[in-house]
Length: 217
Image (cartoon, rainbow, N blue to C red; front, side):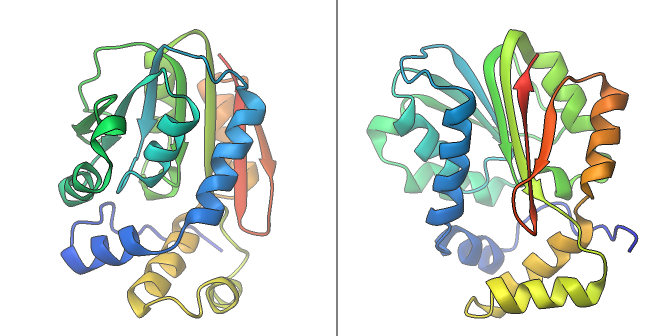
C-alpha cells in the first residue's frame, strides 16, 4: 500500500480535546520505559529536545523521570501547546520551554544531549526534515530516541487495527488513528531514511504497529 498523507496538524478544538483527554498512559509509559533502557541516567541535568510534543503528556512524564533536565518542547499546533501549558503542573512546567514552530523552520538555539520524538514522523510530508533537525541540534554523543507507527500492508489491515485497538475510542480518534496508519512509513522505508541521513540509529519493530528507533550520534 502506498503512503497516504494526512493533515499535518491537529488544530481543530474538538480534535485536540479528544486527543489530549484520551488515555495514552500505557503507550506513553512504555515509550519512557524504553527510552530509559537507552539512557539510564536520571541525574542528567542537560538540555533535552522533544519534537512533536502535542499536549505534553510525554513531556511531563520525561520531566518527572529526569528531574534535573531542561526541555525544549516543540509542536506545530498552537492549540496543542496551549493545552500542554495549561495541563502541566507549575513545578514541572518551570523546566519546560514550549516552542511553537514547524520543522524545519522552528528556531532552536541549543544543542541537546537528548533528543526524542513520539508519533511525529508519520505527520511529516518529508521525513528527512526530522532526521536533519536531529542532526543539526544534537551534541556530540547525543542520545536519540524516536517511536512511531508503522504502515500496514493494506487499508483493510488498517481498519482491522482500528477495530482492535481503538474500538472504544470516540469516532474522531478512530478516524485519526486510521489516517495516521495510512500516513506512516514501513520499517524498510525508515531504515532507508536513516541511511540517507547518515544516522547510525537502530530501527526495530516492537509491535504489529510500532517502530522504535534509537542510538547515539
